[in-house]
Length: 383
Image (cartoon, rainbow, N blue to C red; front, side, top):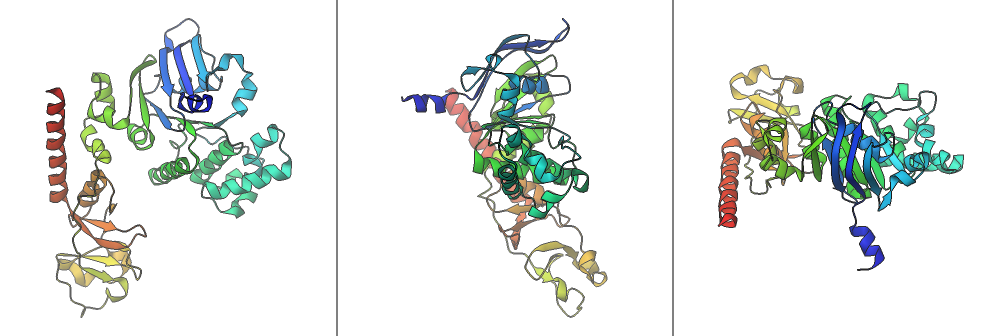
């Protein structure tokens, strides 16, 4: 193996027997040994006071370990200057931490400017990053107070990426925004990671967020103990102890469906009516529930046959629940069916146009078949 191949196969970050104790009390982090893969997302998750944020901050020496060693790309971070180490990494915090007296462009350009990049070049890079994180270019002239919470967090991510760091540290960055924006930011982070392949360490207290984002998940217990470190599917399927099982929750089996392929879900035809014809009583409907669509074929809710006469506007339609895209997980398919007032989950293509519906009973059948198949595989392995 060549030196370059050895370097690429080496973990980006390594904790070796790391402990952090404050004022001689109980450890905030106790004897932590963990390897964080290069170019992957590793999530630290656990309840309040479990040491996950302390562990994150020891990586860039915002917190110094009491004992043990942390390596970055094979080098002891304790031998590096703390200020230079921090500027070599991206850092995104819960409140975005933007400087209120600077424009968005100048906030993003902060670290390149500290690293000696000229003002014009730093602003050019900042402008490029607005597009990368999904923000319009004209937002660059605004100040943080003029942005929504979700926009501020995107600017925070852009600022962390401005110096093109190999490592990105994210300390509960999406916890202060509403659930809809949070889901959008999670999707955006996964998109960015597919394009950029950074080594990301992400802290959250939300096990759903951890399993959505993490290639690996480290579950911390109170007292700073690492309880389990594994792929999210394994943590959901086989928690190592009662603490992990309790933290993951009783519905971990439902979460586990996120890792089961939904390609086998059957999509059935559905009767639709477009919004232009909704008010026309001569347009016949035959199904107990008819799906209202716009002129582009995108869903806008359900119209029950029993009360069709009272539905004359698009706004009258009964909200239709979540959507399922062909190839999504079984969890998405089941959620679409169960959240729909008609009992039929709306299936859409990549452009959001209706292609049919999925039925909850059939999804349950696929879940049961997958469970039985997994049980047989585990039995054969044991034998």
